[in-house]
Structure formats: structure tokens, C-alpha cells
Length: 337
Image (cartoon, rainbow, N blue to C red; front, side):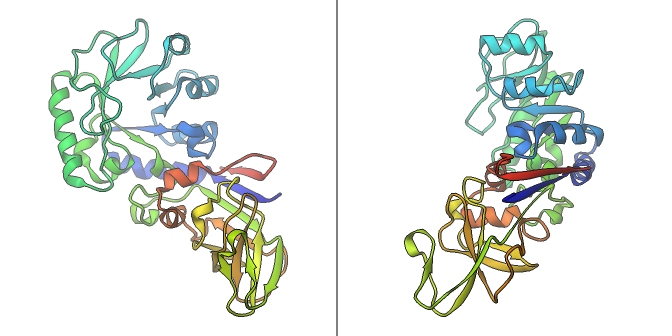
């Protein structure tokens, strides 16, 4: 097998407990959209609920329908828009929908979303909730980057929803949960932090979080480049001296992105730089000595942070981690409790 993905559900449960403490009296809702950010939605949903999460949140009705047989009676909230057919399926499956328009479907519980500054989904003004409205929500745009604007959004939401405090009001994402107690209200919706990744691009341990996913491989080939020789497409790495390199059988199809040249992984326990161009099925690392084929390579875990890879790629850990390919033809997936 080319690589192994290891999902530590014990770490996820501990993250839930950390976030519940941060949330105070608010409920914690687990965001498990996009196949649980690539971690496996059913596995992480079950672990989150067992640790005290009280609802599951997804982006689409089909995502919710995949979860419903496993979690009968659990509150499942669908964030994204739903057409007429999906609304009917959601009604039959006892799901809850988030609406950004004033048209309320019959016979299904809904949450009205108010746009307080994200400028994406949401009502410009909150309409009077109908009988089937059970929640009011908004989405913080800058809780990880701009505290002043986040405070503005919180104030707008609290003022607009004050007359309807009998409904479930929810606003805080992971960053809001960890940094803005005034945003906690009745429930917080945690995604990235649930998986032990920092919403602030820092070391998750700073907020008491543990990465849930680790990713390992091994050296499939070790060779020596002579001075002037190169490795990879475009000759982006040309050896200026005799240099040992290792080839790792993981590439951008597997989710180790093409723009990760220059990041570090651990080879035989030591940090080593990724060199040359990451290809579809492999990348190269510079070694300080000859190592045996089969030497272990840690892509994520044991001090190698997805957050650090994301910084090299100029993106966020959400983007990087959800792009990891768990195709069983390419990677072994191991779930531990």
C-alpha cells in the first residue's frame, strides 16, 4: 500500500470535550460535511456524539441522508440550499434545513440564516419566523483574522434575534467558539477544530487540540544525484553537490498537493525538505545520507502539522485536509478508538 491514513477517534472525542468546555453552557454541534473533512463522516459523527455533541451539521441533503440510517433520532442540520425534491427527501428523513429566503416549506423544521457580514448565504433582514422555524443563525466571516468585524457581526446578530430568544440561536464556528464567548448563544458549530486543526493557522496544541488524522508512507526508492543532476518535472531541483534523495509514492492525486514543494516531512524520524515538483503519484525528499528503501515517512502527525503544510501552500488546513484522497486502491485507512 502506498500510504496509510490513521483516524484517532479518541483524539476527536477529546477535542469535543475541549470545545465543550470553551462553549460554556452552549450545545456543541459537530460539523461533519465533506465526509467529515475527509476523516469519514460516519466514524467522526459517532465519536462526536458519544463525547457530548448534540447535533450533526452537513452541507447537503445527500450527505445527511447517508448519516440518517446510522443516527436515527439525532438532530441533523443541512446548511446548503435544497431544491423541491431534496426538501421532500429531507422531510421524510426528519432533517432540518437552513433557509436564506423567506419561503418556508411546510412540514419540516427550518433555521433562518441572517447575513450579518459574510456576504454569501443569508437574509438581508430577518423575517418573522413561522411556526416551523426552530433556529436562527448566521456565519462569522473573520473570527480567525479580524476581531473587530467579528464583534460587529455578533452585535448585529444578537440585536436582530433578541425578540426571538425562545428559538435556538447559533452563530459561532470553531474560531468563534475558542475566542468569542459572546457568540456562543445556544449552540456552537465546530468543524475544523473538531479534527484537531487550528482555525488560526497556529499549533493546535495552543488551544488544547489534538490532530485526529495522521498520514504515513515510506521511501520507495533511494538514489544519489550527482552535482548538476535534477529530479522531477521542470528540473526545479538541481543538485549543487552529490545528494541523496528519496522518492515517496504519494502525489497530488493522493492529496499531497503540487504546491507543497519546500514543506517538510519526517523521514526515519528526522525533518527533511520536499524538493522538486510534486507529481501525481510521487514526490522527492532531500536526504542527509543513504537510507534503506522502506524507511518510514510521516506526512502528517508526530509533529508534522497539516497547518504547516497549508501555510506552505498558501491555503488553510480545511482545504488541505479535506483534499486527502482515501481511495482504498491508494491508501489504507485505519480507524482507532
